[in-house]
Image (cartoon, rainbow, N blue to C red; front, side, top):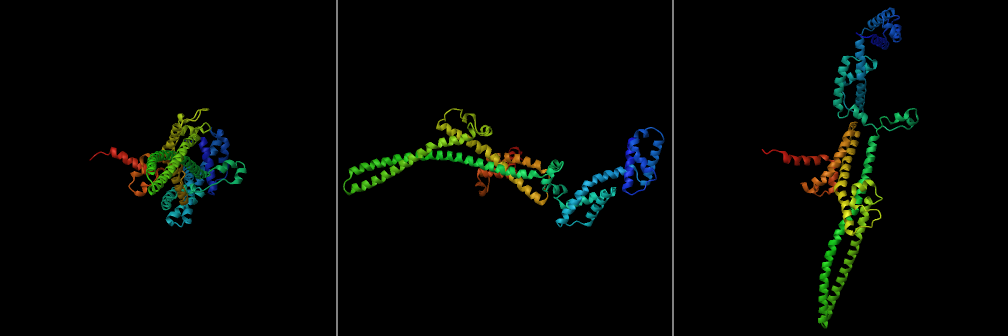
Length: 433
């Protein structure tokens, strides 16, 4: 049995229903029902007030020709359909603007339901017809939905909203700054990747030049030794010859002498250049490892043995080269693949985002997928350098892809790496027939 408080609320609901539908209540009925709000304590005990209230309540229900339960159901149906009606109107507008054919059997139930919701009396039939028509409309406009239409809009704060009372909170509500932040983050990471690649190139070029000079000096020394032997032999030949033969021998001796001097000069230049490279590489390795370096770079790129203690002198050339090798290996094998894989995944996300916004199929739930894909892209870039070597591909074009390009491609299409890993797992887990 309903309490007196519930009946008072229902009485107010009856008066509101009668007013909304232009139903004339019996004389004195509406004032009695409206006054019951402040007389709940008097109505809780038997008496004339309660009797008058019950009589007015029954008269109002008879005049409205509807039960309170039906009014409640209609109200709930109205609140349930109101947001859906707005979504359906957005989709109808989209279909009209984009010249998509919508039949009358789809459009008319949507319009009728919207009118019923506006009047406050949607019926069960209205709801059933609306849901059936809305389902058909969604199928025609797929993958565009009311949610994607809303999410695909760009909303920026209005300047005047910041100066209105309470406008600061309102100005930031519903803003679509996430996509702009994503683009700015991509630009920042692109610059960071470029700087990292440039930094790595300086060190790797120095290390490669040092090894090249070592091999060149060994070759020059061996060649110079042979040429000195030839020069000594021709010198003996000059002393042993006379006349025209001596002149010819002297010419050969002069030619060998010039060759020895050129070889000696080249060897000296190579040794001088070789001597400067360890110091250059030491300065290069100490940029992230030195005492003034960032703690993050010092912790990630360097080991304790590569960090020069305060006041200590520079180590020997071999230690300098080893420190440079450590930094270069970490950049090549760990950080650059992670960066390029992350950058590839972010490039894919931005490309998809621009396409979906243009097609008005962008969804608010995409943020979580984007975050997950960024992490998987970085992991794919790291794994690709070790797993997906260019020799693993059958196409000649793919075999010529450098390691950095492979890491970027793996981040852009993470399915490539996971498909390759599934093939490896399948090779060990497939049971023989």
